[in-house]
Length: 205
Image 1 (cartoon, rainbow, N blue to C red):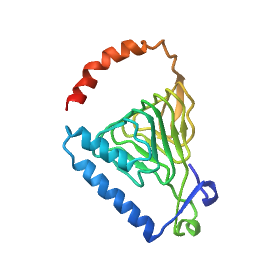
Image 2: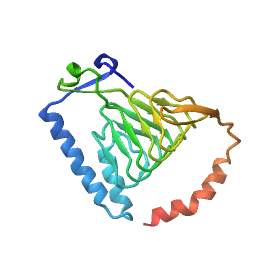
Image 3: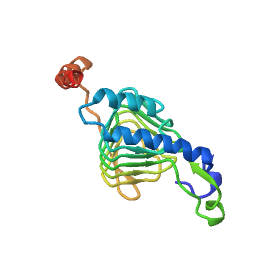
Image 4: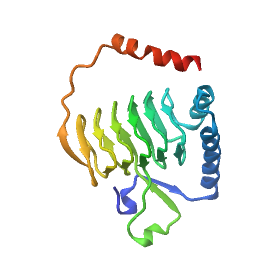
């Protein structure tokens, strides 16, 4: 979480062109959020157009973002209903992340001093979320944060600092409470077989 304008690595000028670009994003979001839940083909097409990198992530409407183009999924992932991403700087998701409902991911913030806050600039810092991270419902991820692979963020947490891999972290401010000892995973073949009925069901819709 940054305090001064110099703490931010992205400084986007607030101009009529920025508002026009964001309005175009809002129009696409309106279309996405109005789609029938079973229209997976149209959902995927809109997300491919809206996001910087979609790569098969499943996003449940309603979904909101600032720019769209700064959001990048490495592979798959699931975002539940009501997720809001303020992507004035890049937001990168690793493989197969799970994001609970009403999570806020905000690269944007403001300086503490009014003299800097009144300037026509939108400051932001990137956010990076690692592979197989699970973020519980209603959590808030603030600018500049990196969350390590396989970490779990408790529901309602406010994440202001980096979280390492393989830990459970909760609270406001979010703090690590214990390490997660990861048991061996099922084989890729076994997982494919477990998930095959669901994957085939979506393919038939």
